[in-house]
Length: 171
Figure (tube, helix red, strand yellow):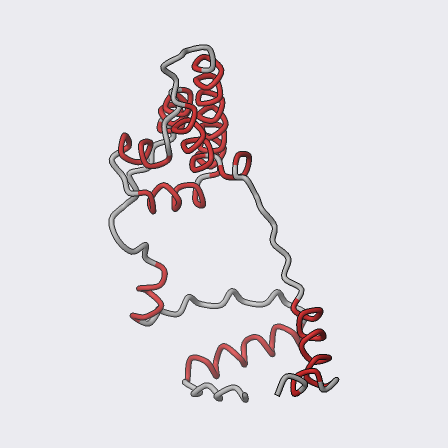
C-alpha cells in the first residue's frame, strides 16, 4: 500500500529547505521542531484507568502467604485485588513474578509437608489430600493417561472386509 503524500505547509517547506542547506554546507542538521500531537496520539500516550495499587512490599506478603500454603486466589484476596490484576502485576513487575513463583513453590512444599505429617495419622483422609494435590499442583501430581487412537488399522480392517466381499457373504 502506497503512503499518502503529506500536505506541504509553509513550515514543512522551510524545514526541508533548511535541512537541504545544512547538508550542502556540512553544517549540523537543525533539530526538528516538536509537532503537536493529535487528540488520538495524545490519548495513546496517556495511561488509561486509575494508577496501579502495586507496591513492591507486596512481594514479602506473597512469600509469607506461600509459606502458609495459600493459593493464588487466597493471595489475591489478601491483597484485595482480582486474580486478573495478579496476572497483570506478574507481567508488569518482574520482582512480583519472582515472588509469585517462589510462593507457589513454598505452597507446594507446605502441602507436601502436610501429607507427610498426615500419613501417620489415622484420621488423615488420603483421598481428599490426593484431590488437593492433583488440582493445586497439576504439573507434578496429575495422573497422566495417554490414549493413542490408531484409526488407520481399524479403517484398513473395515475396508478389507468391504472390499474383499465378506460384507455380502451373509446375505
